[in-house]
Structure formats: C-alpha cells, structure tokens
Image 1: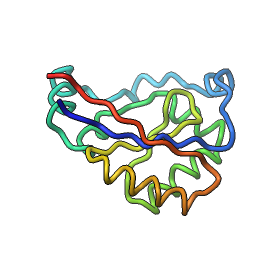
Image 2: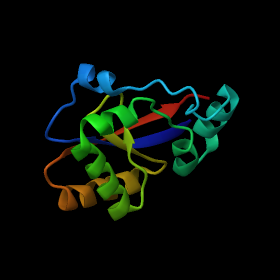
Image 3: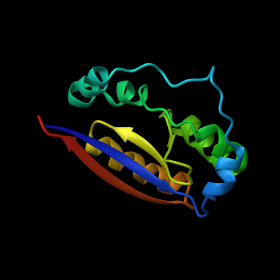
Amino acid sequence: SREWHFILIFPPYGCSTPKVYSQYILNLTNRPPENSLQTLESTLATGTAKELGALIYNSLQDAAFRSYPELWTLALEMEQKTREKVFLSGSGSTLFMVFDRREKALNMKDRLELDFEKNAYTVAQTWMEQ
C-alpha cells in the first residue's frame, strides 16, 4: 500500500463559507484539468507528490483568496519559501501540502513552524489499499 503524508496548516483565523461562496464565480471556461479516474488511481498507487499535486483542483480557491487576501499571501509566501505547492482545503482556511515521504513532511513541518509561527500544524497520513 502507498502512504501519502500531508501537512495541514491552520491559520489563526477562519473563513466564512457563505462569504467565500458569495465571491465564487462560475467560469465555464476555467475548468479543472481533465483527469481520468484511472490516472488518479495510478498516481495514488505509484506516483510522486508532485504528480499528485498536479491533479488537485479546488474550484473555491480563487473565491477564498479573493475573500481573504491574507490567506492568499500566506500560501504564496509559503510556496516561495519552501518551493512546495500549497493547496486550499474546501472553502478554507485550512491549507495543506502533499508529500510521498513521512520524513520530508516532518522536516517541512518543523521548518514551517519556525518560519510561519502564527499557524498551527499537524502531519496526517493516509494510504491506498491494493
């Protein structure tokens, strides 16, 4: 079975789901990447964190970042500092990063705690049964 490791990043503020949805603009030309279930299953089973990250899409991200520019700034600063992709969970405010090795996730969590000390962090793991 393949394990995936996630750093969950909890900023010291929440996001109002109604506020985020009020900023949501249905854009029929800006669609998620066309990924087949087979591609996702294959990536979950044998892919890298970067490959999995390329398949992650959250249609609420733009609306959440418009509603909470400080959340967008935090995600950008983390990406610039760590050179790792930062994703938004749902309508926010939780952010997350994906890793294919626990050691790398734990080391990055330690680094984030030093560089972005106002947030809370946890490392979670999951796996796919084969």
